[in-house]
Image (cartoon, rainbow, N blue to C red; front, side, top):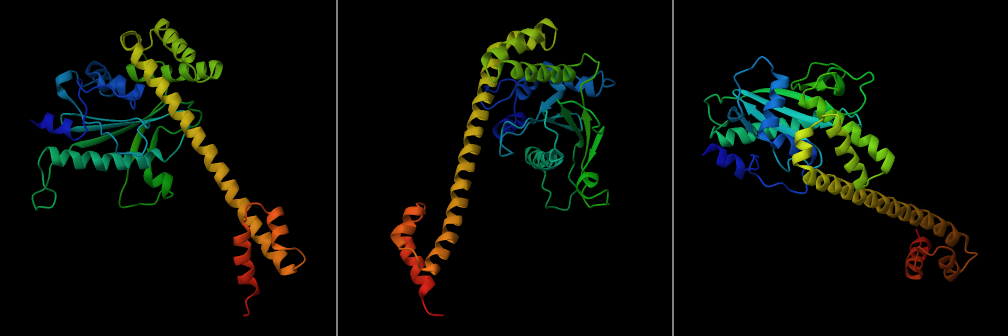
Length: 297
């Protein structure tokens, strides 16, 4: 019954239908076998855990952009949250984690029918927070801290800490995913945002035994996911270009207003002539501007 509630509220199970908004990250770890491998990588000492022991509580649509990859699941009394930081490093990922953790607890209390407004103390799963970074490590830290990064190490009333996972020499599923993403970036640099880049990524990774089973069984889905990412990126680029054009128009219009004010005050040029040299301003606008400038103080 609890699982049914969880699914209705946006949690995911192996039976949930794949959508075009998904990413390889979320699609990979939707599969319970892979989710178990992920947990075993983080907790190799916990040998008694099975696929049935894991509850995927990934929240959909908590953030404004579904292409941010955040994963949440429970094992026993542990709530594990993983956030993917791709090649661009940003400490804002701690804010993402903070919001995700708060929403995860909210969902948990609803699903377990606990009321945190009453006097009885609620039961809470213990949080474990990880950040998977797919870029180059260089001098990046092993752990992130909200107080350190945003408040210069001061003691604050709310603290968030996250362990950072980088590429390593291991063969675990997390490291394989990081390598997959790096191979993909290399192919995009060579072929651009094209299907050929994705095809080559899949071929290279399968040859190197990187996520081989997943990429063999889900090749079609991976191609579709990546194509969706390309489309999203193209749309975003178009949006940015349009925003820049609009900002340029606004800036030009503001400059024209300032120029028009000086020209009207000089009184050496007719409004028609001013409108000719400043096409962003209509003759009616210039007449109103002239009336405002010339009215007695």
